[in-house]
Length: 284
Image 1 (cartoon, rainbow, N blue to C red):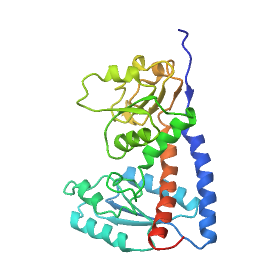
Image 2: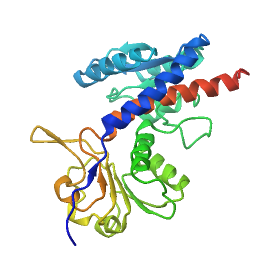
Image 3: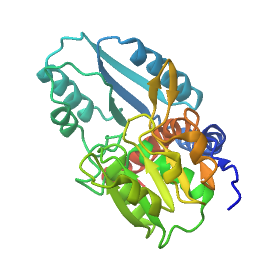
Image 4: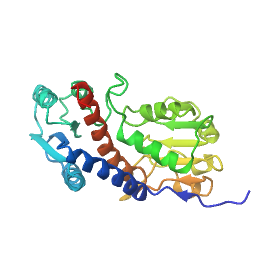
């Protein structure tokens, strides 16, 4: 079989398309005097967190979304963070709540996330508990990239590597909703190679550099690499990109694939949450 180079799934370009759609929706909401607000909660001022917050502030400000940051000392207690989350749940001006990592070692992340109202959980951390919430922005980004390459997922063999609450699990559910046949692999999977070789669609979100060998990729497969790992000062994915790109039909670059779309899906989630809050409050 003649090797061909896969088509790159450019997350920046797809993100621009979704951003325009979001901007149009937000303009309509502003015409009805609706103001969307994203509240952020963070402990300490880690450099990576500061950079991401500054990016979010610019992105959200560009489409008219207000950011309401709550910044606590790095040694803040779990009870204090929970009380802040409860306060934001009660604040009718807050559309969505986002808790930044890293959190204090003394805090239990799952306990904190459990206190976020399902109607304000912009990251979809409670998606398995209620249909009132939204799915993870990353999982929505993965699906958007797959659908940009394949119109029909029915009957396709899909393999998701990683079972995290923010990527693996919600991505599997979204793919099942599209009638794909889904296998989720994790650290206890006995033969990862065998599962990957069967995949028409591969999503890797394990956070392990080059875990998936390029030679395992089924010819013509769609490969979505969510992993961002630093190796020798460079960001690389979970998949051996060079070899995989000669076997796959479509593949995401790392960086520049899933990440840019994820940030726009965060905005889409805020819009969805606003609509659901309006319904709950008896507004159309």
